[in-house]
Image 1 (cartoon, rainbow, N blue to C red):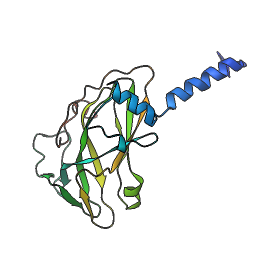
Image 2: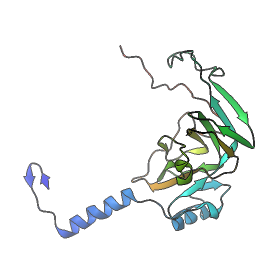
Image 3: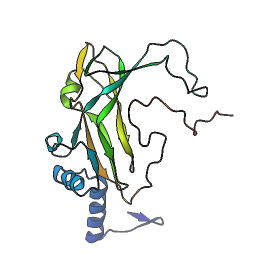
Image 4: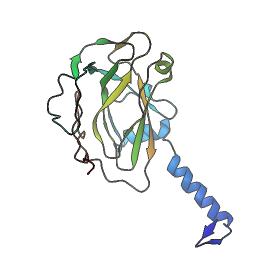
Length: 206
């Protein structure tokens, strides 16, 4: 490796330390880790069901609450008024509902989660639902987040009937080194269907 422009040979212990450090940074928590974190209160998942644990992930269930994105041809200006988005979304609550071809739904999680500042999580679609043609965009849960999760689900090429309580999604939890600042964003403590909120970092280019 190069240090200040000079080639320096790594000693075996230095190489091992670098490998160990890399392993820690890319580690995914196992079923045993998640059980321990939940038991000692470091990771809050309510309700928590051990049957939803996989070897290194946790299945998350969909609730009765969801929103359909309308096919509204009226342009939404992201620098404009975000206070009333009712013409773009239909918020509903049903025990079962259909996701139509190419439709986009926002769905609240059944579980409430509190993530410590030394963990983060990635949300994914479970394999069975991917094989049905459903899609979810890459979504992460920040360290320190508290609240219900807002799932994004895109429809397949045929209608699919969804039932509240179905474990459609899963999350992988990963350590953060060192501990991060706790998330304090606009979706902290969210419950129910929270529509998009204007972000203070959006600025016009001058």
